[in-house]
Length: 199
Image 1 (cartoon, rainbow, N blue to C red):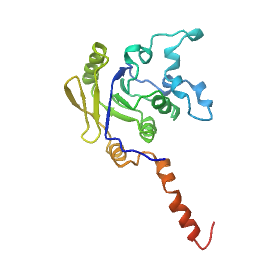
Image 2: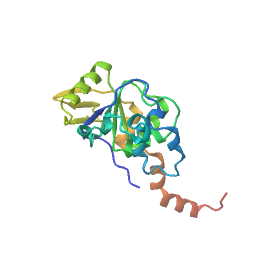
Image 3: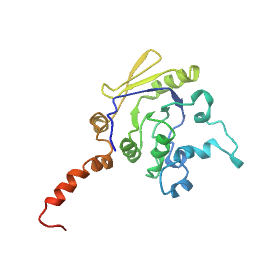
Image 4: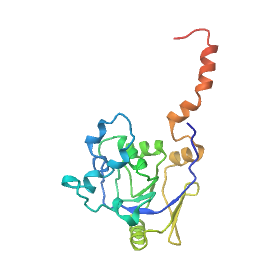
């Protein structure tokens, strides 16, 4: 498993308005029984996207104009609630690589970083500006530069917030600790073979 540095992300954005969007809204608890995370993208915001009998409710992520978006624009305290890893798994498996919010629940932020989801912050006014921009033109390209901490869209550049540790991990390819561990399997085997004893 080879990690790649995350320096820049380009794509369109979908607005998912509201503060305190918790992990149960991101993915309902009944989808946590899965053995693997495969297919969890289909469950993203499920109860807000579909009503009784699977009737579509017109959620932004299902709108044709936002199809293929890589960025989510949302509110404050995104990812609050229970600390389920399934929430960021659903986000990335639905094709989203960046979340732009006012703030994040700490555990959600950590789980997202491990998966390579870049969680950045912007003030309310700037997020409202971006939301208005994509509603007017859903094909507006967003360019996030992790290294210099900027987001460019609609001819304007915004200074985004990103935690130093997460930024460094993305740039150094060290954001996925499990993948890092697996890359050292050969060295681990050699060291184990060289030990005079084993536990």
